[in-house]
Structures are given as C-alpha cells and as structure tokens.
Length: 320
Image 1 (tube, rainbow, N blue to C red):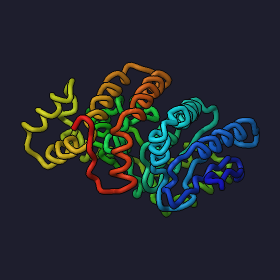
Image 2: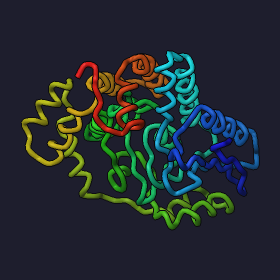
Image 3: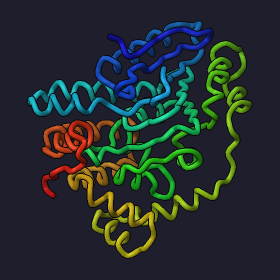
Image 4: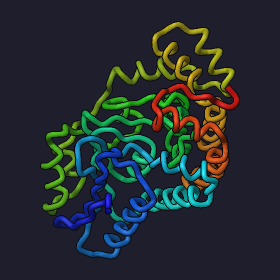
C-alpha cells in the first residue's frame, strides 16, 4: 500500500502525503517514494516546481514512525532502524539543494520529520491551522532532521527552547522564527495550489498576491521573554535561571524540562550548541551519531512506550 501520491499537475510535480490514520508519520517506504518523485520531477523539463502537501486535513506530517523504530530497537535490529534515518537525512539534504522550487503547503500538525521535509525547502506556506514542534525529548530522542541546523539559528534562543521543551509555535511566531516563509488561510489553499500548478505566473508574484504580508508583530517580544533563560551554557544554568524567574512561561518550561528525558536534554543541548557553527550536512552527520546512541539507550523505548504506545505519559527514565 502506498502512502505517497505522486502526480503531475500542469507545470508542477505534486507529492501528496496520504497516511491519515498515522497523521502522515513517515516510514521508510514513504521516504523512498518521495525521493523517487524528486528524481522523476528533476528529470522532467515540463515540471517547473514541486509542491509537497497532505492529501487530508488531519495533519501535514506528525514526524517519523517512531513506534516502528522502537520495535526495531527492542528486537536489536539497529542496522534496520539506522537505515530509515540514513535515507531520511539523505532526502533532507537533497531537498535543501533541489534545483527546482520546492514548495510545502503546511496545514495542520507539522512535527519532527514533517519539519525536516518542509523547513529545508525554498518555500514554506503555513495556514492558520499549522502547528510546528520538535517534541523528541519527550520520547527519549533528539531533534534531528536537521534540527541542530535550523533550531540553532533561530533568534532569541527560541530554537534551544523548542528543542529542549518540545514547545510548539504557530502563526506569526513561526513566521518570525523563519519556520514558515509565507502565511495564508486554509480556505485559500485550493486557489493557491491552482495558481502554482496551472498558470505561468512567477511563484513570488503568486505568493505576494495570495499570502499575508507580515510586518512587525508584538508576539515577537512575548516570545523573546519566554525564551530568555535558554541562552545559558548548561542545563544547570537553564534550570537555575528558570527557577529564579516567576512567570507562567518560565513555570511551564521548568515543568516540562523536569518531565522529559534527562539523557535527551543533554544530547539535545550539545547538538544545538555545536550546530550553530556547522553546515546542514555536518549537522545531519552529528545527528546521525546521536541517533545511533539514542536508539541503543533505554530512554527511547521507554519514551515511545509512554507517549505513543501505552499513552500513560509516565516514563521511567534512566537516569531519572
């Protein structure tokens, strides 16, 4: 059964994610199907751009299929688990270098692997229903898919905050952090897609006409206050800063940090601190090594169990 629908519509190659029951969670077959589609469209002179979308309104893409990764880890099939990430990371690097305009239409949940598929492309058009997050520390994993590249480059240390706490952003916050390049209403997507696929107009002209013009937003200041303590050099420093300050945002961040995997927190902070000086390719390389450690660490199996399998949200971390 295929979960990726590939078709040519006018001047565009359209890649539709179609695994609604799993909120388009990526498995290895989907990664390979998307990669094959990019090869096909790359070689077709009639295709001027590629459009990535969800074929249903439940989610854009909720990430990688971590239940399957957990199963492979518990069975000791680490090579097979690593193959998924190896091919996913190669696809992400390809997207970042794709020679034709790569356009993601993001409506609904976009987490983990969903951000990997979109944020490295040229155009990310988000609707008012788009929600972005990298929630890996809650399942004993690390924010990969190039997360150490794009999170580390966000203003106000917001990427450190997102990567450690798994906090979500949307709307003007996501736009201000560079997650989305354009914003539009969900009801406008059919018209936007039609213009992209079936007219000869320049893409930038279409987006200028059909997407919001975003100026200064007060929420940027609120977000900067939320992420204030995440400029510290160590986890201890972040914790101490949060404990000294009294606000709802700081209290919420501290509560989350005390609940997620301590192992993942340290790995994540190291990745993000290193990532700011590295290329995307180098970031994916360090993430691959961190992934290899994570799938062999007990926190991954336990975190996925607690959040995605049993859903009791009571993980037993090692160390606690």
